[in-house]
Length: 422
View 1 (cartoon, one colour):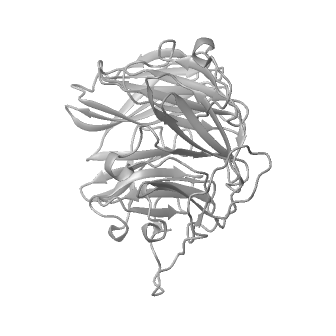
View 2 (cartoon, rainbow, N blue to C red):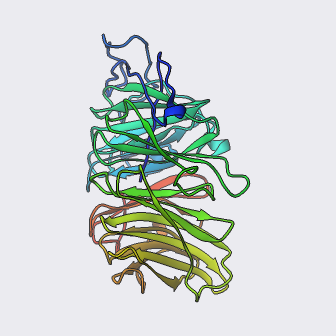
View 3 (cartoon, rainbow, N blue to C red):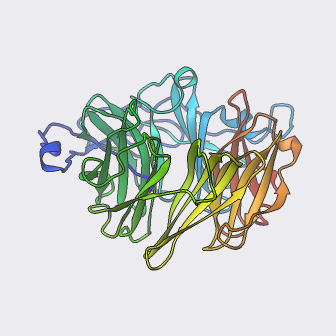
């Protein structure tokens, strides 16, 4: 699941006592895409837009085609594309959060004007923690900006692509330190997972849900109840109808994967530990690449596992009867991202030395074949994957970052066999 957050304004909310959140809405002055603020009569407070230009160009001053890094200047970039042309990217420029939008497949990007957001020393501290702004978009119009500060989760949400923003907030437990996952399956229905520090191999986790687009949030589950407790990170997914979901995390104490599956939007989870196959010995490290609800009766977890046999790409598939089946494949170096385009078909981005190689499976992960290599002129030896997204069987986007934290955006129109710079 990609989960969310909100805040409290003016009313006292016994959120933690009743396992529910509440938030009062403040309408932030609308902000035009040119960066000029409009007056909003519905607002009792002011929020000045962060300075932004009207657009970023797809060419340099000497006429050469500019790169994604040249035009956006983003560090820690993230991306959500909705189709072959339209989407949002965001990240930090110095200590300021920046949000940009494209409607022409990344040839040009328009700065989205923002309400006042907290500064964050991203370049020295990295992602996460207090005042780090997370972002999530459901479609071109509906998006959410969220961060933690003290005992509050704060959120700005828009229903018009950033022309105007509304604010809400809600109280959170004092040990919540990071927004780990946020996901909206519609303009109204969304979830948010908060995670605390896990210095002893375990960390508290809190699952919140909104059914009104972020105006209010309700605490629906915790690691003290049914969410995985051990480990300090989780991945999650939910079906478009908002009913069926999965939360998965690595248990570092037992070197297993802890999962919880829900059939009621997260109010209740059935939990279990997924062990590695008997053929996998001396597990040293597990990193979950993706947790996915396949349909209302089955789920899938894909992970990279360090073992006595080297690096393994492990796929765990739940069948229609709730039984999990695990397959493991040897990989050369390190699989950095995976995307499934159907029940049986998936693509993986594997680093082999200085190259990024595309691997494909057509049998649910039992076998993987090399399906292409990203050209050397598009990647560097230090490139790492920030986001891999397949829109459909053919169209995909790959956001990578080099050792200097400079991002590059690549696209494919033939299912990952060939890539070009967006």
